[in-house]
Image: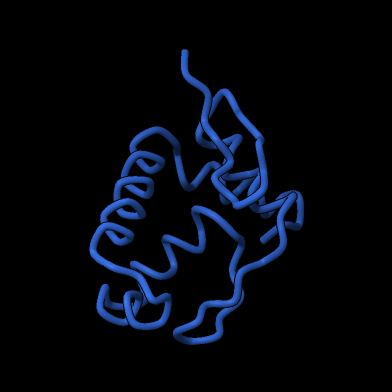
Length: 100
């Protein structure tokens, strides 16, 4: 069984489930301010989700000095996490902890 990496720069956290990794990112790391609109969101998965659901890929590339491989990698991570976890359950857990 492979472990899920936290994915936040400087963190070596590893977790048994994608949900545990996302909960960790949300609870244990500083928030991220979107460079496109200024919205503050949890670091990691929720920051990626925000960028790609609220903004165009072109806006992301310009704001983050990114390229197509950066976009593809984040899309891959987002898709993989969403295929492995129940987002509604994770959001409910985070809301019950006062983390969202």
